[in-house]
Image (cartoon, rainbow, N blue to C red; front, side, top):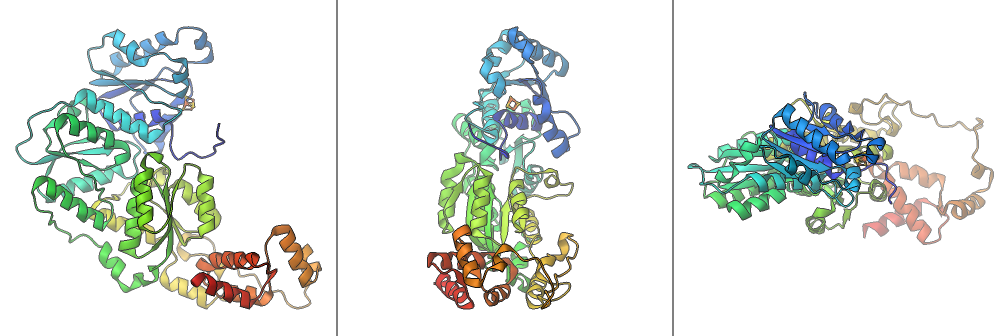
Length: 525
Ligand code: SF4
């Protein structure tokens, strides 16, 4: 048992739903208890689809358990076929149905339907959503794709885009455009928008472009085995990665990687003088491994941030994540426990978080700006406008998205210089965040009564001793506290923590201005 409030991924049958809903002409019969239809909302509300997912649930109830749940499943499969007339069907069980051990595959086979029926074996208690999507797509390809003669002109398949994928819709469009610039046409892009009959002709392509290893690697390996198609290993997120990807495609096809880059703006935007203040900003990165690894490369080499921490929630990709983290000089955080992520962010005190919807909440709580780079995401990250992450336009989108939550250079400067200003003081926040201006607290005049904290009734030494004994933290002398406020607000949290740790390690009970500077010198070494 594990106490969980937030989960980064759903159960594996949600992954299977992402494949089924992304495709057309495919139906999913899911053995599941009443109530599991909640997952429909992910597609109709978050992704704003204008149709119900092509999923038939058996929705058994407590009273059905005494009877024949297997028959319930057979009826549901038969009815679904009659009503929807799909080209192919996938059948499987949700977590609860897994426990009652009816056999969806065997039961549907006994019906003798005139279409391919693909059984899914998704271990709900060991694996999660991404595995579910990958395995489902893999099984569909395994059952339907056959070796075929290649198309005359050079073509490829694009693998891994699903329903409910972070920017999958626009990534496929962007990569299709990039490939067209090289003279390569797309044979089939799947699972998103593909039909079972399209899957059947995937063998015609010369090679495969794997966009999302999390949801397409199983299929890529399957196609390599059965159809002899090589597949790309570089995911084109970021300028450098996109160029590397084009070279990889060039090496596979023998075509030229030189494509029109005239609409690529990230390199100049980040080289222009206005971006100087971004240099060395401390960033923490978390998400699925593919997006987090890509983000770290962009952050470090294309924008000039310093990566102070990175990690992913999907353990399947722990190895590449560890290698990437090592290259950035940090240790990878591999966890699906958001509390661990929060503790790490609190410890590192970054100036920017690049993460998922969960990290947005964490950032909000800790007062740290955040941009979203990976699923899980909310409705605002299925935007109406064109917003890929991949290719050259993706790089433009990324630059704008990441810079936006940061306080602009000039404003940052003003906040630090005019700390006493009525408008540009520390607590006011960035002007574009929509927060109302907060009036600056007036300093307490001498002689004016104010409520004292218990510690203020003690003399300084006693207060310090009490604080160390009770809280284990040294207290700040007034002068030191004033000095601390001179440090720009976005690094002040870190300076404060470092100084307190420095003092506590040395048994210093009261932090003076000297302690502050000694700590600064100590950590600068
Ligand atoms: S079967 Fe699984 S996903 Fe469905 S309600 Fe039960 S625990 Fe949740």
